[in-house]
Image 1 (cartoon, rainbow, N blue to C red):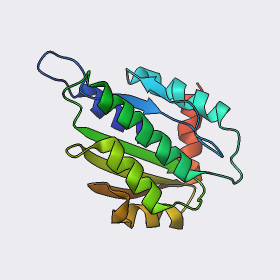
Image 2: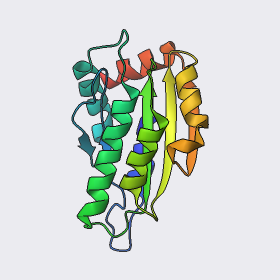
Image 3: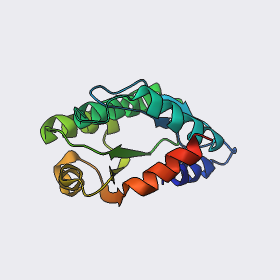
Image 4: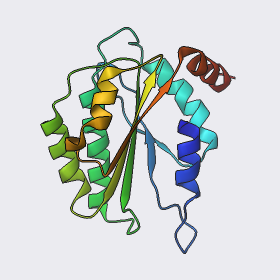
Length: 168
């Protein structure tokens, strides 16, 4: 799923042939890790492998709000740089096997500030290893500020298969 999103994002070009999207992968557990820019679809598998090595906490303590705020920070920095006039849409894909308390007001304010008055946004919340009530709540919570929000689930067997192929 992540590779397909990255592939689509990086395939969209402006009139001069430059990608109109900036893509970052951010691992997170109790804290959001440093964002890693992705410029080609070939980088995705290696980066997923690296992120999984650096994201050690898979047994609780997930801070979903910290990950969302880090995404908002990256989007705001990109928008404020003014270097890419085509930057008009932000897509945030959050994958988690856990849940945490999220203050919708704090997240909404961060994204309102990050997106500005005209940028469109899509939030995709992806549950790993079963149904995730917290991610369902976030996907349905229109007050987070996304123009479109969705929820997907992947069983542990699918994730294990993806991780095994990423580690080749």
